Length: 326
Image (cartoon, rainbow, N blue to C red; front, side):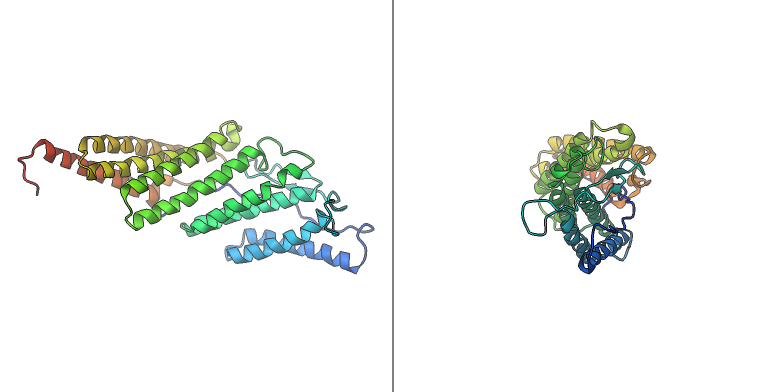
């Protein structure tokens, strides 16, 4: 199965020099600041480097975050925070609100924002490979790892910004849903029981519905395109569930129920197709594409059509037992 995923843009940030003349003195301290500056630049460069792989990203992120900890935690390993925590102002844009930046003079804000971008990179890398469940789960885990620091911010996250709880939750649930998509594709490839595939598809649809509901109270100008994606994926995988449930019913000679299940799949597929068109026409962050043209979408349409026709033929044989099967 060829996958297609919606991706919001990466966050952008202002340069940081880490020069603190008269505050940070001595060669060792100067070296740490220079290493911070160079490791930050290196990590930002990797976000847009198509040759970057997960190992390179992990090494660069670990290098920068380990140095940044010196600006957050006291070096004597006590529970006190570092005296340098509030020395630097950091600016970051948001994935939904374009180039309007948020700024906080807090190293924890930098840690969370950069960690958020690393997690987004993993989702983008996974979508390019279109089938690496582990990468997508890793991205989800990264979100969980860095949101733990959000309560430590002196200035609370603004509503509708990336670090606000609704957006964080939506991103995490979407990662879970997309990982589940890969599981479904593998189950189909390995010819697992239709009942299992139907259950997985139904669960995936519920993930997308939950993510969509999480964003329902956000400003439509920022969230409309993302929500169209979540809604169409919900309809798409509900159609999948009805299609494979119909196959289960057909195998049990329940042709009438199978037909009704496939007819429901047909309606949901048509609804998803309409949402694909709306997605392409909706303005907002994310790619301008036509999802209905992707293989993952077309294959389901053919599967629903062929399975429904098979159910109707089988039902016809039952209604006409004297008719010979060809």
